[in-house]
Image 1 (cartoon, helix red, strand yellow):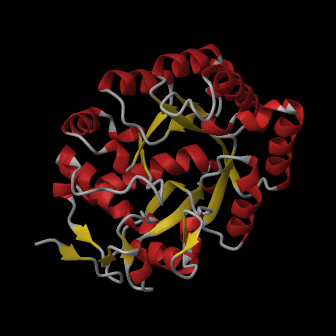
Image 2: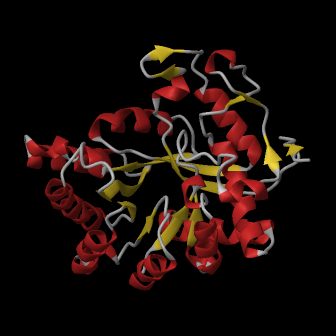
Length: 310
């Protein structure tokens, strides 16, 4: 019997390296339809009570930047990335220099809150949004932002590994001084080893734990190269996932969005508080202490993104 989480007993400390907190789901809007009241404040309160010490808000387009920055300014525990997701790189095309400069301006004017460049990279699963050549061109262009502002990279690689690695390896002098993390990793152990040997970290969330092969890969990734995330409201852990049977912590959940209450999660919407479930699967898969692993992953994240706080 899985336990229902007691919010007030946990003392563990986590950092969610990727949460899409500006998504309209946290305003109660799904597919342009309002289903319940905005509840981001409740979501964040639940996260802090769960043991989240910091959350990094993922920015995937210039249009999301202001909302993310305004949110981050309200809480010392919230930070953001700034960048353009590969599926949104068409936004560069009409005026590349203006778009690039606007990204840079957001970083310069918010240096205490912007802690990474991204989400940037390649995504060949969704080429209907943006073709390969445009993705590659503006992924590479964003590497210069990381170099110029001495920021780590928050990287996206989906069904594009060879091209992704060719670009970052060719731009090693721009990437490695400040490093980065390949988030939402769901690749093979061979791909993980190549990423790690290059000098980057691996970010794990529910999408990293779907299959038995995923779990086998996770077991082999060195602990000092792992960070954790939720990618909320996406990448939740589903009953069909191989890792689901290893989850110990359940939350009160409603199936229908219209049945939302302040004390319940919505079945189809992942929240940062559910990072504990990611940790439980990783710890069980590796056969190691959750507390010890969470401390290691926390330290990894601090070293990459929060050096000045150490």
